[in-house]
Length: 162
Image (cartoon, rainbow, N blue to C red; front, side):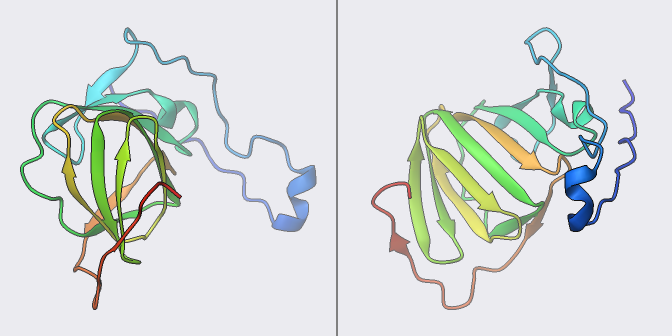
């Protein structure tokens, strides 16, 4: 099935936003069910990605996938960042340990939420073998760029999600 081209985006100056026709990008209502969602390739070969179809419904403004482990994470991902405005993750099962460019090291568990602005360097260290969660990216197209560990990086352990 060929994906539709994203709809044209209405460009609006900040001063004109209050009187702009909303939504700025044409969108359609979408109900993602197991019958109408599809598995897609993703960044990690040990995860299975179920696409909720929000990228098409939102005119490319947002993407949502449910990720479920199909095997063990055998090595850390390496330092990288994402080309996007933001990435949001909600852990539904298991846990993940991450490092961030500011020195933060954190372990997130089921029920925790992660917000990462685009361009923030990070490294996924390890996960439980049953990790699962919802990942949302804005905009829908999100690039992943490998990078070096930040110069002078030293860990500062986070006791809890902040």
